[in-house]
Image 1 (spheres, rainbow, N blue to C red):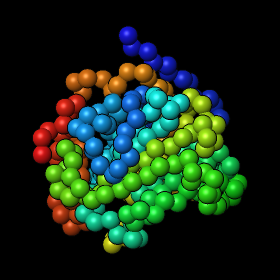
Image 2: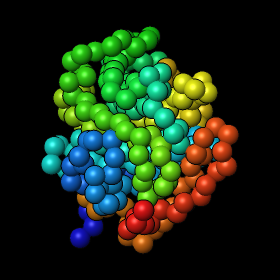
Image 3: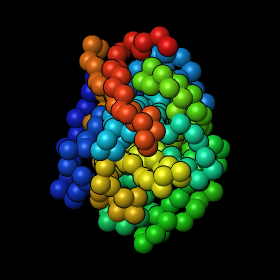
Length: 239
């Protein structure tokens, strides 16, 4: 039986309109920077990154660990250079500058994990918060894009990190390509330093993303290559 709870966003929440998502519960993913199995991330709903669909991301919650959020991010960059950044930002309340309830989590290059907590006016690196975040990134292929591209995974123990409960929660996904000096993000006009520009997780469900729905995932294979359209199916295509 479908069990879902839709939550009303309070009047104090002022995230970017039109960028609201649901949190779908799932079994824990293996955080290794790739689709470990063909069904590992099928529970969640794919979303575009950027205004020209330079990637996609999926969020689902690990139902075995207090519904800890987990993220898969696919970025159309063909390499994972030392200066590249894959970023997830989350918070439990709206604000216009980073507060103590705001966290910025990054993979810098292939392996460097950095986790920052808001100070009220800026970000400060936090080793305590970093212990609650698991990350991995590789350059490989997927059903969304058969070309080599960056794939990153994040698992966040939100109870340990900030004591967050159920949605609403703020969220921002962003990728930086050092070779071009360009950021792409969801929402496209968001910035890490202003949480009120982020999107929002507004509801959650014990059921997976509905069967039978599809979404076109547009990935730009490089900064100068043509855009390739690949359709996402509940059962990913064989590569």
